Length: 115
Image (cartoon, rainbow, N blue to C red; front, side, top):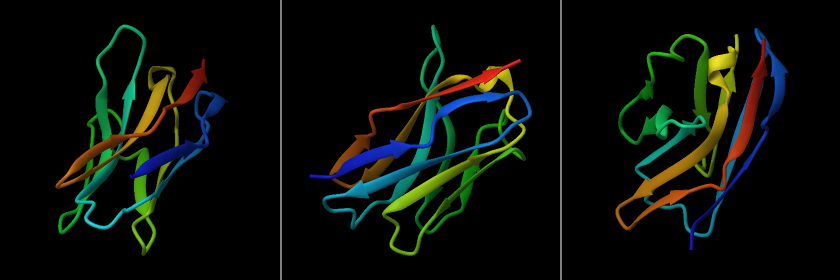
């Protein structure tokens, strides 16, 4: 069974950077899309960035140019480099993996950006 474990959240001042990592285990073959979502208090979960097999990277308008998603060759780990962070980036960030037979979420990691 696929498991996703996130790391790298924390508290940072506005303008700073953080790097989130998602490590996947337990059968990662067949993952078609891997990405990051976030959910702020009182708001719905939203896409931040994702990589689609055979396609490219997709970014939310709010983070394009500041965030970058990447993966390793084995495609069992993907990172989100977040630069020029803003207070409105504060949220719980979740990694996500989609395959034909599963849509898996990590447990979430808190990112807090102070002004």
